[in-house]
Image (cartoon, rainbow, N blue to C red; front, side, top):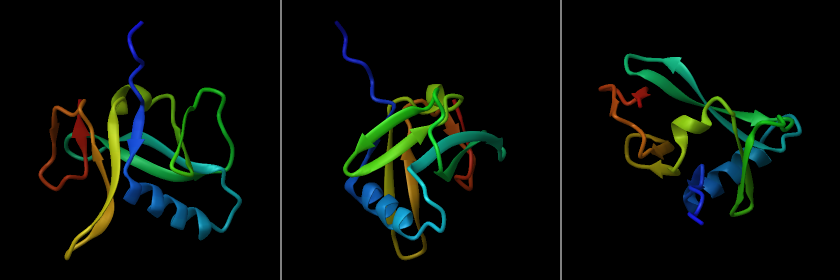
Length: 113
């Protein structure tokens, strides 16, 4: 039987950043929700928000001490993606390494599959 592809994997850096964000959240949250929305010149953009409850259709990834909920409308766009948190001299933020992406806009804000 073929192994099921994981919807999302997290680097240690991403998991630590999520833990930090969750600790500073003003409202009770059960995890971080990832989705996609139409945006930018390439078509889609990743969205992140605190999840106060689980939707029955959410894909749930529990790893490295964090819970990530994937909006069911986003699952097909991010299947197999690695989420990282990167800090460099100019910026810091989550980075998505998505094998489904066919291209990105010049500023990196949006992607298409």
